[in-house]
Length: 178
Length: 199
Image 1: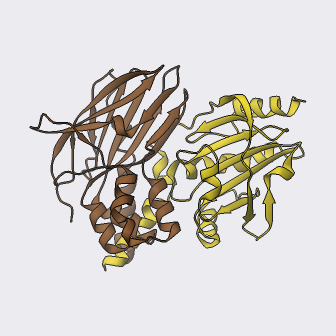
Image 2 (image 1 turned 180 degrees about the vertical axis):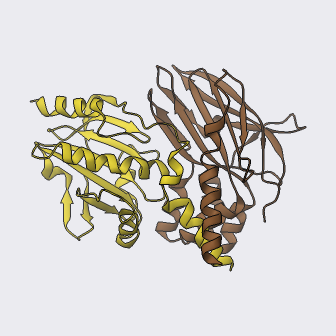
Image 3 (image 1 turned 45 degrees about the vertical axis):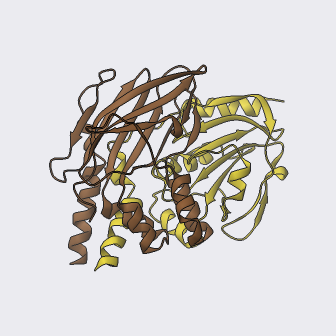
């Protein structure tokens, strides 16, 4: 009974995001520029299909790197907006990378199955947290906007509404950069 | 039976996180306290100079459930659940960046004039070091706790657990501090309460 009760509590605590939304503060759309812009730390990780993704190979594109985990409530809240952003940016040189911290493919699949909108962007597995430690991350979620030259251009700490018009404006302005 | 428990806990959790929706209007520096009428789960909120702090009690059962299901051993889980644990949100609603360091925070137990330091994730991990947690267990614990140090630009916010080493039922004030342009600022959240029991 102990295990079943605690399993149930945990499932409810961390697997029913809809219940958490009512009283949570609204997701933000602010972002903070890096001055000066600095080259991103290297990142090479496998995605959920076992395919290797190397950030350096994405030069020439605007890349949104989101560090997250399924047990992190604001991560869960902002996640659907990343897929909506991907859809709005379809056909443009914009890539979204969801870097999951320390969880298995099964755990991520379980979370994804609760979403109305399945993420079609790559989810990378940072199983030992090493990638996150090389980036300026102090808490989850943290998101970085990487410019076409592979530099950290903007950052955002905490949950965001990624398809908010302000976010779209930021990405469009980064796309227009030389 | 299981379904009944599931529904009950669903209700508990839903109400837990809607408790603050019924909070009183914001008054600078005044702690707002709300208790969900059905579950008894309390939330405290305070706004000081554009910095918002919110603490919602995580019951010992919820703390145990989270840690057990991240793979932590029962002894460590029990130790953690015997502290007063809160889901903590800090939000920078001001116009300038703030530097947060949990080492600057303190709490004052009721009837005590001596401020005490919070238990940080580093304190817990140092205590548990001989247990050699698997990397995913350590990672989940570490990143579910409120960050020790962080810079919050305007609009930035974060959420994580904070822990206070006090007996069940204790009351205390939280002195939360941040730096802005190198100057230390302080806010006070008053009369926070630990769970009545750690069982």
